[in-house]
Image (spheres, rainbow, N blue to C red):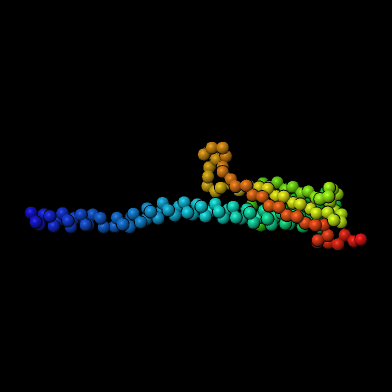
Length: 154
C-alpha cells in the first residue's frame, strides 16, 4: 500500500510540471494585448495632436505672409495639409481662419486666429460595434499678429 501511495504522489507531481509556464504565458497574453492596444491608441492621439498644432502654426504663418486674404486662405490650406501629412494624419480637418478686426485681414494691427479641428479614429475598432468607430476630437488654436513675419511698411 505504501508503494502505491508513493507512486500516486510522484504522478501528481509530474502532472503539474510545466503548468506554471502555461499559466504565465496566458497571463502575459491577457495583460499585454490590452496594454499594447492602449499604447497604440495613445500614440495615434498624440501624433494627431502634434500634427494639428504644427498645421495651425504653419497655416497662420502662411496666411500672414500672403498678400491678399484669398491667397492667404489658399496658402494656409496648403501649409496645413503638408504639416498634417508630415505627421501621418489622414483624417479630414476643418480649418477656420478669422481676424480681428474684421476683414480685410492684411493690414497693420490685425491679428489672425487659426482654428483647426479634426478627430482621431481609434485603431482596430470596427464600425460594426455600433454608431461608427469611436474617436477623439482634436483641436488646435494659433494666433498670429500681422507684421510678425514681414514688414507692412508705414
